[in-house]
Image (tube, rainbow, N blue to C red; front, side):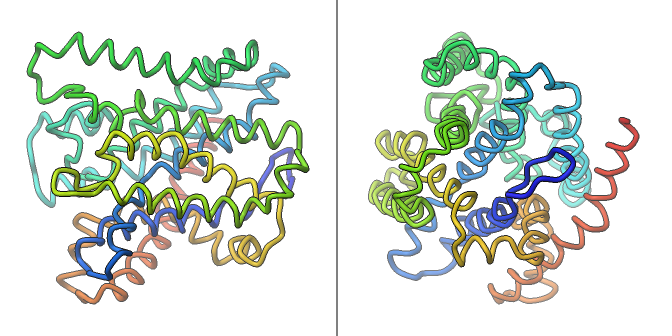
Length: 351
């Protein structure tokens, strides 16, 4: 862990973001290559790792400030919006020019409401359905902190309360056919904050168990190795629920439960290892090169499928390795010369 200007920074957690983004890339190309059992495992690489990391880091970076009445929600949300929105909106405009869909889908995508509608969840920048989920977590952080500060049992009641709210909305609109708004239970659990809240909450819970107590008992279990091993075992189990009816294991009720509940605990354990253990892997993730790639992970995530990927495929090479390398180079360039300057300009303007 490094500290500078009263900021906590875990270098390995910057590097792990690009690994997570690469895993999503593997998820999307799983049907493109046949490598036996690995293809079915690649299918189960989902975005939950990003949600768990967000919960984990948000607790570590901001809960003490909240406790000490030093937490500024305005600054917190401005920083997140400066990170999430500009690049997404730019890529959304390019996508709309590249292949126009409809004014309704564009407006919903621009307002970050697309992932609440079955018909529009993959509109324009398809993978960006996760941004509204991420944003809802950030918007609810003050309320969540308020609850868990008063009572620890809100780590359980918070996700259940959010899920119940989502179910209430789903049943309330069930008689209205409006582009699949909160279409069904599976949609609610997979594509909205109402279902993904468990991963964020478990990320914060694991951070609390480790960071507040610095538990030596956790470190005795070699959390980097143990977390990675449990994560792999969970993925193998979830992938076994793939069948003719369920393309992905999480479409099965048991697979969904494992993905939303047990998998985040293994990810959290792995994150503890990256923060607290000095392994060869954590040292590798902490190198300047991996931190740079980690910083560009958001750009890579937004371009790894869609028009940029198609351009590389048709204009440069259809070779999977060459495409992967080109997308990474492009993501770094986008981060360095577009995303980062805009973010810095917005944050400096804020001051």
